Image (tube, rainbow, N blue to C red; front, top):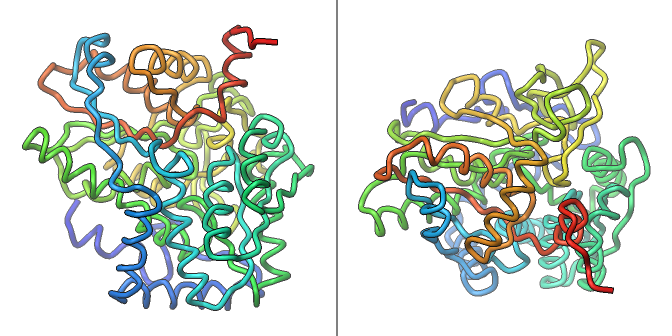
Length: 404
């Protein structure tokens, strides 16, 4: 892939090859154009970049460490494993990188009210956090099923002053939360900015979120060169919508020696409505503002999905990932619920790090790949978030008794 190729995507209309674009009601065309114009102005504004850098450093706690996972490396007996510790960011995940960038844009545009969708709750917490910082009203839409399995994050959002609205429609998970957030935005576009949480949706969201998250890969690139004096052989990240993965991958796309692996949610196995692995049986379609690979039936109806991880439980994948997969630049695989749970426990007990269930899918893929590589090989796994929110759910699934 040439530098010219990566520099020119998406095109002016937000297309990554046949993917992406802007498929929205007429009411949202103007606010999306306003957001696009403001974002590209801010990108060129040194004052905006200084402000963003200040908050990422002083409030979020960046740079996040690139940690040599010694015991996991020894246990697997193959490649040397590094963890990019996004779990150490304030609020506990990579989501704060994007939320911080977008709240500063909302402030520039004179918006006073913030809305967001959330699945695992980490984006909701990040959005509630930055809204509290800047004194803006905040409403978070969250599927009722996800509210139940992510109770800790619901409480965190409420403590931060956000209104959390459980969504009881459909499957009661992330897709329905996005639908409700979009309905709200259509109704309240003048006062409201929608902080979409992943590299998905109508243009400019996929490129904007990618660029706010690319700090992960920019840092990882500098850090691995400092520690190993060479680039890694393999990058691994979980893929729901895909923001943590594209954030890690993007700065390495022109380095042909660096292989990349995105890991989707294999759920209970690759059977209809038992997983959320869009590249395993998905097809081209339009959902919630963009064209990408979608789990749908022959009539274009969106299929139900399943994952033990609320943040990966979504029927579509970010359009840039679809493009990179079709180009053959990035490989995409999946980890099942059982594999993710095993990786969750292994990382906790070997390294003293409790990962988010989302991140555990990437760790599971690392556990599979690392032993097949030589000890000279280098792997970076993006540990996109921490697992405090998942402890009760995992304890129940693996049979750990909680104290009474």
